[in-house]
Amino acid sequence: MKELLRIYNVLNLFESKEECSQEEIRKAISLDEPNLVSYETWNRLRKKMQADYGFIVTYNKEYDTSSICFDKKIDKDKLMGLIDHFKTMELLQSYLSQDKTMIECLEFEQKAVIASETYFNVLQNAMLQNKAVLLTYKGYAESKPKEIHVNPLYFKQYCSRWYLIA
Image (tube, rainbow, N blue to C red):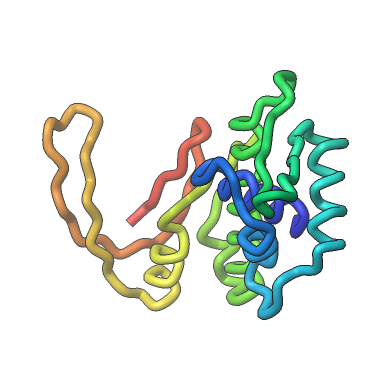
């Protein structure tokens, strides 16, 4: 999982900049570690990205920068989505390790599709602390969003979408 997150961070970095310094890349793949990863770690990851995923990172010695190109056979968006799924599962796992009662507040489909869930953390904390949250909600048939206070009780996945029972 750590390796996938590192690849995700490298791809995100190159989406924001065409050329990146070695320092920027090492910082991106260090995740939350206090020290930058070594050049050797970055080189191993770079080789794996090329061999397994078709992302070729080339180094420009004159400018001390790197750039990336993608093999046409690779669907970068699909890979990024897959990594988002893993990140969401890791987030759910961390909730369950903090408080086992969270398992009673989650329901998955048989063939669950997990997407990146931005607000899980806020809603989970509100649920565990029995606190209300202010949501901006726009129903399917409504033209304008409205703000409502809710007390989160339960997460439900249905038809590949997440619902909050409140």
